[in-house]
Length: 121
Image 1 (cartoon, rainbow, N blue to C red):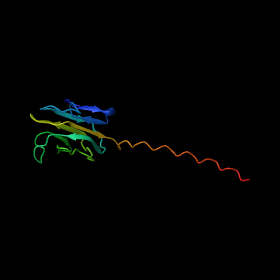
Image 2: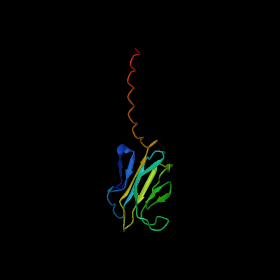
Image 3: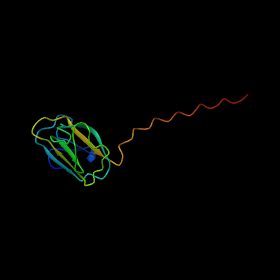
Image 4: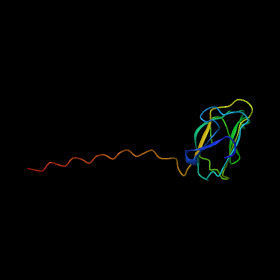
C-alpha cells in the first residue's frame, strides 16, 4: 500500500484513510497485489460530483466509484485499487474486501436426538 490507506482483516480488506471516520482532502493511495477475486463492499460513502465521480473516487479496473455504490462484485483484473480525494468535501470513506467468498454465517446447532421409546408391556 502506498499512501494513507490501510489493509485490514489480515490483508483481506482495504480502507480509506481514517475509516470509519471522515477521510481527508488531497489523498492518494494505491493498493497493489489485490487478488482476482470478487470484491465486496462493506461500507461506501464517498463524495460525489456529477455522474463521472469528478471529486473523490475509488478506481477498480479503470472504473471510478463514488457516492454510495462501491465496486460490489467487481473482479480486480490488474490487482490494483486506487483512491483519490480532492481539495474539498468528503464522506465517511470506504471498506472493500476480497475473498473467494465472504465468510458464511455459522450453522445453527443440531437438534438433540429424540428420547428413547418406552418398552412395550
